[in-house]
Length: 101
Image 1 (cartoon, rainbow, N blue to C red):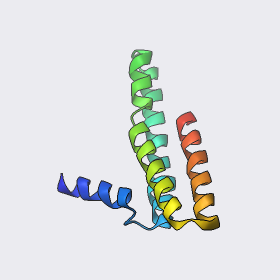
Image 2: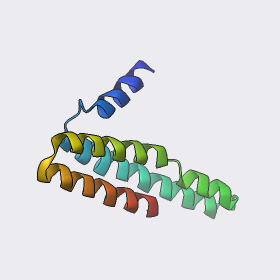
Image 3: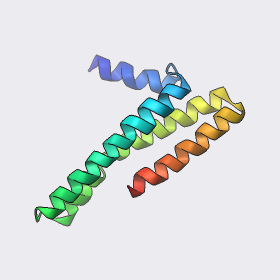
Image 4: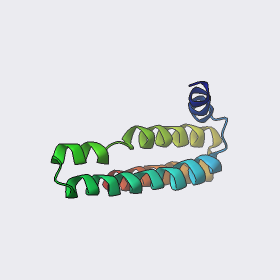
């Protein structure tokens, strides 16, 4: 539990560099999580389960997606400049795509 708390706080407080947040946490881990839960929700729906269960599985990564989006947004605001602005735009586009995926 302490490790999870430290993990969350490091990202929220900006202790993790912006490029690591974007590349590793958002683009790699976040996208992988979204793809896996999309596949899982299709398997659940294909097995004849209720559409609500499939939808619930599909929405499982939403808290992580929102958290990483907000962390990137906060750190990008601290960084500022063109890199900060582009990071914020990338995070918003990624969140929209993740919601559709």
